[in-house]
Length: 375
Image (cartoon, rainbow, N blue to C red):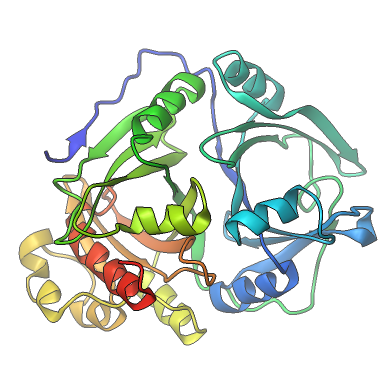
């Protein structure tokens, strides 16, 4: 192999039109402290809150926003309940990948009749700002797709939340929107997950990588990129492959104790400025590739607009395809378990996912695994 590009099929009507990612909800051990981290280090602002003060008795949730990105951080208030159960098993991690739709009820109906397992039946939430309709289904592991219809709502987030203004609201770091979210599934589970997205969600497999391309001396993995019809939502799916030592996917599955979201890729228009600012605020990124990577950069990707020196200093990777190039960098895990991390990406025309950087990226990941004793 070999990267496999899959042609777009425009002949089939889209039964599940998506407008993009509405929000990503993480279940965390301490939402107040997590919110402070994402605000200080990543540049998010608090825009809404729900908890005991708003009538929510079992949890507290903080809604953070930067650009079009919404993160919801939820924490349990007691030792029993679904949020605590999730944290006990998985640690901090993504529970809900919420999708913005025009009709949440129809989205639920269409996916359920195609085999989806229900998480939440359709419901309408109302307050003085209007109504929000939601419904949810399970995807891989315990991860949820929540359909959110908010065309008749003008509040801060949704009913049950109050707007938060003022207080500690640090400057943005330039993050704009969610580019894609990557899921890790177990051994021999990728094709099942791909089939589910095709049949239940109407997604297409637009790109495939096998273990001959995504490998190092010690480990390997396989990946397929799933996209909805209009390309607004993309979910790459990874599974481990046989190697001499434990792959990053195996490490994730061991410490997350199941399948789940591996990383969230967020876009910027100026990755050098964004990453420099995030580093200054304490965000830890994977170690940079060796000097030789940058010495041969222009030979591999052609001319780029950026100077190589700041890219090398920050450890930013560059790759290209027939439509242009992209710049990307990956954080270290944002919690002590080696599970969820973030990717910062800037696209200069390229619509691919950095295949040319896989070897450099995974060698960097393996250096971190070795330090943890997990390689």
